[in-house]
Image (cartoon, rainbow over the protein chains, first blue to last red):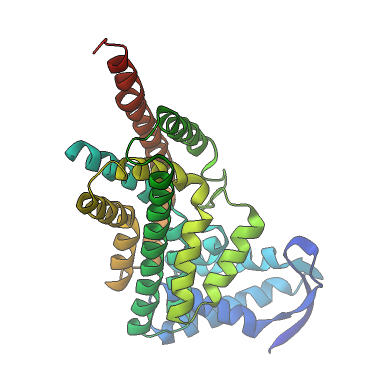
Length: 95
Length: 238
């Protein structure tokens, strides 16, 4: 599954909504894992697990914000790798 | 002489406690590592960024000293010292009040539009030249706060001999880069960014307090040493 038929309302609400994209979420989780120097295979595996969990969570939601997706993904990632989750959740508040 | 260099060193230490450059370096290296950039290229990017910060710091300091030297010569008027004291004390209070935003993370005082722009540019940086120019920009971006320690250092510099001026510029640049050099070294030696960022977040209030105190202490010292002492000497009290 790549794109899911659920609207993601963008941050601030100024940009148009877009469909949920698994590859996009996967890439961001993978990058967060690699940022804390996790091996590539581990990063791939964690990103897949987090994407699966987020898609299950999205099943019952008609529309969510990108912040909701980020928060949920961060919470799931925290159970696998707290340090990666810390970077993932805080990357917008570094400066 | 030692006294003048000590003022420059303290001003540079205060400069080093400001965090925009460190935040940008953290973001830059985080995205480079996340994109599987090689360690050699990562080091090139972070070193270019640090070099950019050093170059802009030297340029601003020497430019300020040149303007002061051209305007007043080696006899700096009391008014210039008084202005620098006012700036130091005012900025000390401002640092305490709003250097960091009251939210999670290490969000700085910067307007959010500027912060997002710098953040996006930092994440998109892939070449050493871009990293170098980002380093230059980060110093300009924080000019509102670093102008006070820079001004005091420039005022001190113009009273020194040419050889000591070079030493003073070197001391200021090296000490003001300390925090950046430490973070650069930690990243280069393989430390996790999450730990560096967590340390910064956990200690941000201490750094904010220390920077504010440093500005106030330097302001008070310059006031006593350059204004009260000189005025008292002029009227024959000392």
